[in-house]
Length: 479
Image (cartoon, rainbow, N blue to C red; front, side, top):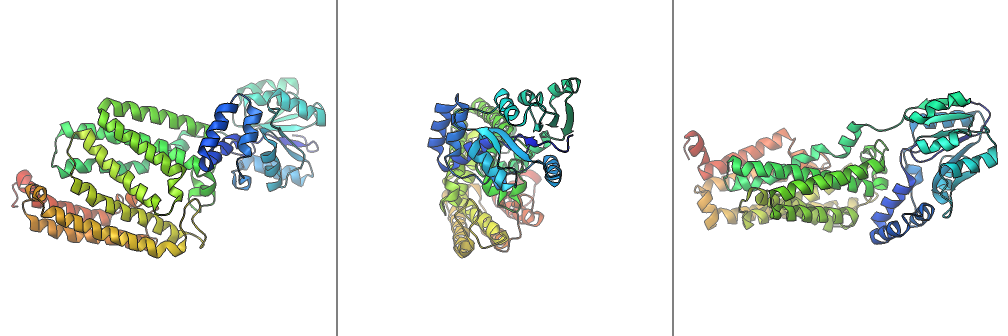
């Protein structure tokens, strides 16, 4: 590689492990969804105008965007040698200029200006006019960069671009740097550990004592459909939260925030997951499909707007958890008791408060949570709402125990009352762990991994089975 000629860097996928156009689109979607969609629909074929109008929707924190480590080393070496380092990108000139300033690069940039989309041959022409043929080193990452590499002294290739194999025969040096993404990183973006939350679909079957394969199998298929749909929503949520995640001490390591998976790959994966989830839901029954569509619509509304609204966000979380239970009833064709739903909702409301309490307790400073409507002063109010949820759930459970339906399913009512002790203990413990910041950012996932807490839940469930006479039915035990 030349040690005296300017180093010119492509931006998307080369200097940055992300794409400025897609960053602008998702940032705009989070701020002004309808206007962003209108711009995308009306200017899609005019790429330069599309990039300019999306960039104008609002500021982007280009200083937070992930830089490719290998490229950063090359840039530092060039700057130490006193060489000019320029950015040349098909992205909008305002964002490219801002990015160059963020990293102390040359003020001379080459970028799209709202009329000309500076890509391929257009970019090559602009660089040759300024630096001359073979007058620069160019770093890129895709086949369209061949038009530029053919006029460069040296081609710095990020990732695998088979077309560059022909460059040495033309007297153009080639330097290869690592790039690309992995399937493992994409799988992490799907958050498979969150799929355990779909065990909630089993609750109606357990509550109705329907322990048979005819009921279980469709519920298991429903759990798969919900897992696929949830992963699609997680991708959308992460793409809408790129800036907030990059400001977070833990979430900054998420695959899209750190650039481990390209945004474009995430969008394709999201579309595939949605189609698979809807196809599976339709194969079960219309009721389950309707609930899944409602779940996805509410989740999308939560990602776009509701999660930024104080108290509305935790209420929506509770509703989404409750919908999983309703979905389980629909999949297994099981009647779900209104008592059960009224009992579960305040529990989920409390756990939503626990989620925010944990985030606030673990926050590194007193600033409001990025992308959320809460700050440290709200911890007391969150604790109070969580406490109300705990008390409300226990009151509903007691009322159920003395109802006709409760007495029919659980003849030994006193055992249900006894089950309220470990149940209440588990709820209070979850709230306390959130208050002291001693659990995961997602209380449902934490609860399903917490061995001590699972022991308490098993004790509660055992007492309920005893009250229903199931131990006697299954094992001939007294009840």
